[in-house]
Length: 243
Figure (cartoon, rainbow, N blue to C red):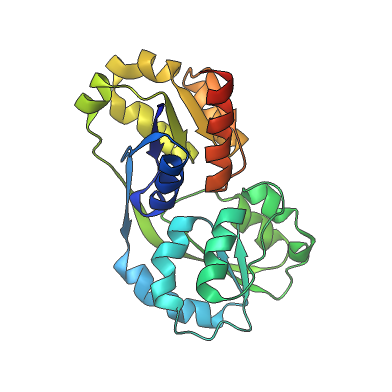
C-alpha cells in the first residue's frame, strides 16, 4: 500500500485524504503551512464587498476564511470569480451561485484570458487573498480599466511536521498544491533531507508547481488537473504502472 502525504493546509486536506484512503492508499497529512486569519481585514471585508462589482477569490483558503463574513450579504448583483475549478466548486456550494472560472488552467494567466474579463472599465474589483501574492492579476485588471482593491484576510505561517516520523518512513509520494508549499517543504526539511526529497514522487496540479520542484532538484513529478479526484486518479495510474 503506497504511503502518500498531502502537503496542503489542514482545512483543505480532509476530502483529499478521504479519497486517498478510499482508493487504497496509506494517506497522511504533512503540515508544512498553517493559515491564520487577519481579524482587522476580515472585519473590513463585508464593507469592501458591498461596494464591489466583482469578487475574485484566489484560493480555497480565501473562500474558507472569507465566507463566514460574507454569507449574510446579498451578493446577487456581484460577479463571483475564482482562479481555479476546485475553488469555483467550493464557492458555488456555499453561495448557491455559479462562479466564473477558467475551463482550463488554474492560475492568473488562465483567468485573465476569459473574455468576460477583457473589458473592465468602470468595474470595482475586490481581490480576496492572503497577505502578499503575485501582482499580475491586479495589475492586468487595472490596465483594463478596473478599480482594484485587496482584502488580504489571512496569513501563511510555518507548520511543524514530525520530521522524525518522516525519516523513519519516507513517503512513496507527496501531493504538493502550490509553489509556496514547495519552498516550505525544502526549507523546513533542512539540508540533511534534500537528497530524500529530490528522490520522491510528487503529484502537483499545475506546471508552475512542477517547475518549482524541478528547480529544487526533484526529478519525479506528475502533473494532473487541480481537482482532488484528478490528483488521486493520477496517483492510482502511476502506481499501477510502477508497482
